Image (cartoon, rainbow, N blue to C red):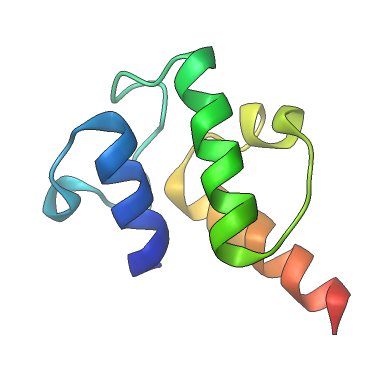
Length: 76
């Protein structure tokens, strides 16, 4: 979770201490352009692959963590 929080913090320019599992990427100022950056960083940092659409429908930190975990678990 800390890695994803740091990525969000850098992309959204929000202190990571202010992020909670219920934080919404778009409510914190995220845009479609920033979502592209987020997608690239997540795929690189976690070595996962999924569509940007999946991030659009899973905009909270918790939902993205579940998405990443599910992708990692399918690779095992």
